[in-house]
Image 1 (spheres, rainbow, N blue to C red):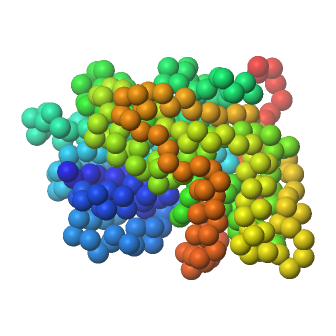
Image 2: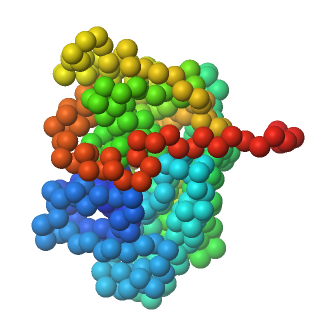
Length: 356
């Protein structure tokens, strides 16, 4: 099976690439190598005869057509996206261009390729999205996102992903393009770009800097270990029912404060501070505008239909993640110099008005 993986030099995409090659699949990694991409993420498979790389931007339709014609994939796994909520608040244009227009380009390039090849039965277009398209949940643990939860995006990022989800469904209904979709909870693990919460906390702690937590730290997320997610994605891509969406969650809800406290406890054990605990560095900062209170996935469909469930608890995953960052300074140290890393982004305040 030959896979075309967009965004394969990013965090989740590279986990998919590494696992797919390990499973014996041919993989074409298509990536624009924007600020959060890193070819070192796939260095372990770069010399494999199963792996090829295409330096292409999904906003370039002509280049996409060339890639499809050259490599003739069986399955497309579309992960390329701008993904950081704070960056989307400061600069929404890139999110519209990449996540919406880029997905349109991918759909059209895939459709043209599929039609030209006689609409082969085995071809699939797997669109990978986020649970943030569903908005925010109440604190009630019995209430979770399902595949039929109405969309209610609250940030430029989630709105752009919601729009891309709708495009994919429209290409299935209108043109018959064989698609599957998935929406995941918050990922974490090795190779996580150092602007997201978990790597920020780990690296700030190692530098003996303040550990910033938005608001009062009560916001709850369902945490999914990235290698578990990659396993689920390959299963959905190959076995998911056409036109169907699958919610992929870690079944590990934690508040941001609880998560940071757990990381501090792991670091206290693995690499103690000279004085005191890493927990002493926790600092509450002004909240993100429109910060969703809670995300949680109901994974019933993927468990019932495909037999998948996560294998890593959040405590196990955080231990693995902290150890990885301790052992891989050569990977993360150069990334700290990239634009915006280490700076507080997304602090634009809503304008006054009568919006509900």
